[in-house]
Image (cartoon, helix red, strand yellow):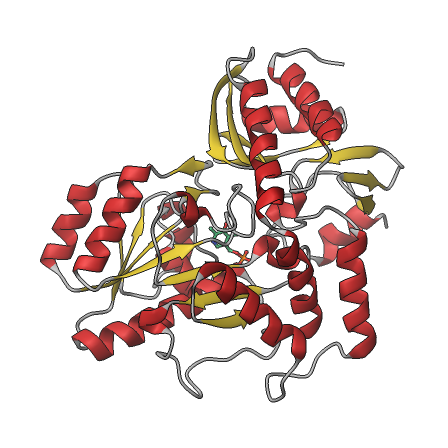
Length: 390
Ligand SMILES: *Cc1c(COP(=O)(O)O)cnc(C)c1O
């Protein structure tokens, strides 16, 4: 059997894969089983922050692998402690809980918020408000948090205690918080899976102000937007707000599974011994990878991300076949005249890997993609959107 046939026979049918097997990669280039080269504009869904096989990252990971690959959280390890310190120093948050994925980083945020609200405001205060069109993960609780009905349909009953309001509608949020006790508001500053839709400055600030006024916790889901993706270390930093809890994962460790829940002043000591845990969480190899990624996301590197972003916005805005360009930093959505899925497969044909999000073409290149490679990819994407084949 071919690999594609093996996979179809034995791997659970949850993924509709493209008919391509990636066998190796270098930088922003991926190679398939036939030796065909692709410019990677998806980064494994915003995960490989520095592309494939980045030398510095690999050294950090292999160096740790040579020392110790896992200890469990019964013992101290250096990468875990140093990474928590770096995350706190770069954000002003106070404590970090490590897990292995985005959903788990949100799960911890939700547990911390519930415990804080129950102990401060009583057992009736448990509702977590999220936005319609949001995405927060696939566990039963983070599905309940996800404000898109189609993800819910087959999996009832979901965890209770979530309410959804439309984004950009402060009145709806005010009405809800007037009607019932609310523990936390959970938002993505740029809705990723929802179609690369950034929230407005005015809305995020109003949400943060309302949350502060009512001692409702503000949780920002930075699983996709975090770790430099939007041209700031975390997307909330574009908005001048200070969340109480930040969850992140995807690009944090540059291609290894790591989730982090950053706890601010109000909640830094909410979780105590035995309240939460994870066998793999804070794995030293993953943390060593994350230290390498985070230590390089300084102001001048973030500035380069913003410049690459400006280049892409400029290249795509008003181009034939492109109706709208949305997003922030190197998280970009294209509303195309041709169906997004058609654009993605035509781009793949021509050697560029892109993603979709809802009805958009979604681009999430490596943060260090060379300008020359980015230009080449943009040219091909534009040609495909304009309907030029071959
Ligand atoms: C991808 C994503 C998640 C889920 O992350 P997993 O690692 O797949 O569990 C949660 N929230 C947002 C905003 C995401 O983009």
